[in-house]
Length: 107
Image 1 (tube, helix red, strand yellow):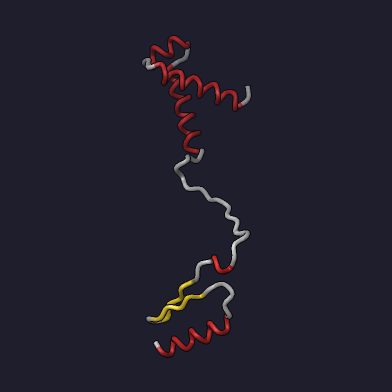
Image 2: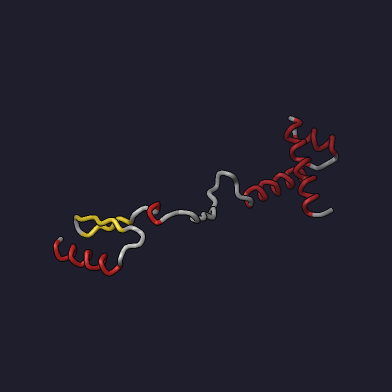
């Protein structure tokens, strides 16, 4: 048997035990399995569940910005002293540098 088949068999047995509502000893006797084996399978399942990300965990998602216009991009707010300046896509860096220098001397 492959690892996947063994894991599937183990999971189906654990699900069968949980759905039965029986005590461990009774279920194990009926299925000719030791309680130690059943507990081992449940530990393996729990360990595998911890290693796979759950739906509630945050995940990184690729974001494509194709088709967006520069006007759609939000401005960057730069504060110099008590003055705030909005900088948008396509600004002239030399003009912005002059504005910041002037604001530093005035504020």
